[in-house]
Length: 180
Image (tube, rainbow, N blue to C red; front, side, top):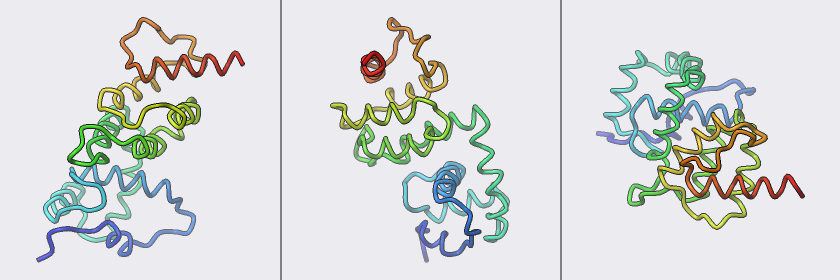
């Protein structure tokens, strides 16, 4: 009896319009994984799949395809998005590690914040050149809060706030760039 369901199998079972963008598909798969309460990236256990499909009321691929708009809409709900964002940290990290390696963190941040956070491309550049090789959970959670509360021009950034050093150093780096 099959105990794991490979994401590639799911992809091959579903058909998509040619205009369906890969990034859009990736984010839907992340939201689907969140809905399934999947523990590991790349596959779903049979139990996760059956429980999740039952909660989504899907018993065939056509019904699952019809849920894509609903899954995408979860990203527009502030509370659901925060839960998906937080879920993504544990979902994406190696299970024997407490932190995300920086390349995985950058990829997940691009997927989750790349189209909505005006400072994302600058933050990504910062991470590319920084000394950081991992991102811990506190840093991960605070990046979302920072993206939601600090203006793109950094004018409301509170230097005395309780931001992780990673974000303090990012602001300092960006301010130097802005004055150059």
